Length: 106
Image (cartoon, rainbow, N blue to C red; front, side, top):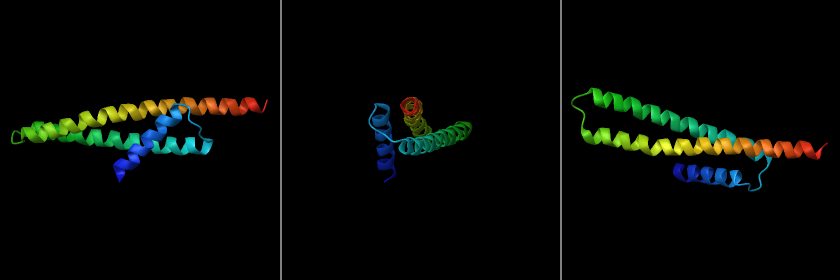
């Protein structure tokens, strides 16, 4: 279920960054959710990196366990990069929306 929610969030962020209609309230909500998702990914990466440190320090660790953690980190990093990029795009979109709104009241 969580993967479907994450996928839905990423898809909606892509749509909004690509100029699909959005309200100010939805922009705030999307920003909050995307920021939370970015923090979650950052935490998962830190956890995996700590685990890698522990595994590489232990001569009894299996290569399979190390490879699993490396794969996990290498999967999470591009996801984090995309979420950060989408957050930047969302910020730009919010700025354009607010500028247009203010210009309408001049």
